[in-house]
Image 1 (cartoon, one colour):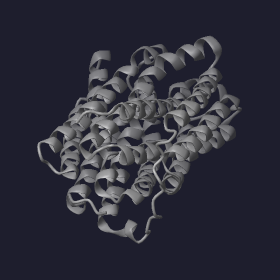
Image 2: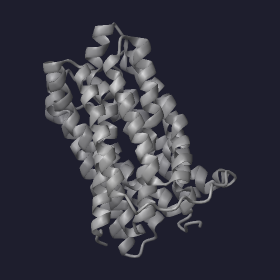
Image 3: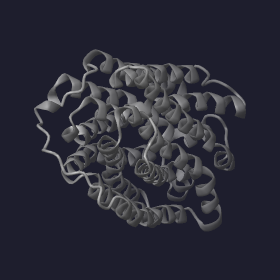
Image 4: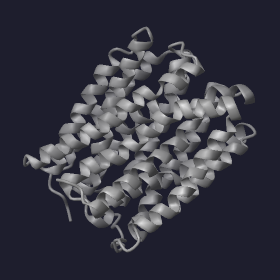
Amino acid sequence: MRFTYPQKLISLLLFSMILLNYLDRVILSLLSPVIRAEFHLTPMDYAMAVNAFLLAYGIMYLGSGLVLDRTGSRRGLTLFVGLWSAACVLHAAITGFASLVAYRFLLGAFEPGGWTGAVKTVSERFHPAQRGLAAGIFTSGAGIGSVIAPPLVVWLSLHYGWRSAFLLSGLAGFLWLPVWWMATRGHQAAPRTATNFHDLRKPRALAYVATRFFGDTTGYFFLFWLPEYLITSKGFTLAQVGALAWIPFLWNDLGALAGGALSGHLIERQRQPLEARKMAMSLAALIVLIGAAFQNASGTAGVLLSVSICTFGVGVWAANMHAVPADGFAAGEVATVHGLAGSAGAIGGILFNTLVGHFSASGNYFVVFLVLVLLQPLGVAALWLWLPDKRVE
């Protein structure tokens, strides 16, 4: 089913918004070796900074959903994009461990609104057969942000200092705001009735919460730890990371678009929307397993191939995972359910991130990948068991 012109414009804006969302958060992972060296920080110090982001992210994922279900996507996204862009600019003023943790916490508090707002927008403006591809498009913004980030951030760091990367990325978010506000003028959906919190304790909502708790950890690993993994475990230099680390994230984008198109095709072939999402996510978990099986590959090409297979699977997963709330829940609770589950995903990310920080200190990534490949199957199993294909209005 083709998009109308307004839908194409909205898709482009959501794509660019998520691109900036990921660019803002991935800068630290790319510059962590430089920043850690300058301020004499350990890998566990870095893990604590990441956990500060994830703690705030987990708390405000639900908070952003509540705000968006009450204000609608137009006002809600304007608010959250403005606030997280300001938090990103503050990173240019880092002076040590305390300020790093504080600014990461602020960034984590406001960034969930981007994802929840994108899901809310898709639920308001797209047909079920279009939602997988629409979610794939905005999800691919994360991958493109990560593709752009390594060469851009490393180049800025080498020529203008690492602080310039945070400053310019944050300012770009402020440029997005007036475009969004003008493009969505006159198209604001009316705010829905407040969510009944009793409904959030029902099995179908808890199924999606479990999916995010287990499944989000895979994406968080590649987002926050890929440069560290390539440098400390595989012997890459910072220059190599800048030149090559975009490749796995490009495959993440391709996976998101392919995963969205796959579930959309299944729906057009008379599969129920939720059934199509679950089938695609099951395939995604298998793809990640295949990529992780080659984790011990040696040589630049082998390492990048292994990681790229994993990130392709993460993309397939994410496109469909973000479409589930619009397919499975009433319109007035889409953002809240997505936010609650996102909070659970952040909690899972904190636990897994702590494990990664522990094992990465000794270079033991085998255990990390072993745990990683077990989590997505658990997440999609919750959907198959407790989230029926019929949407509840």
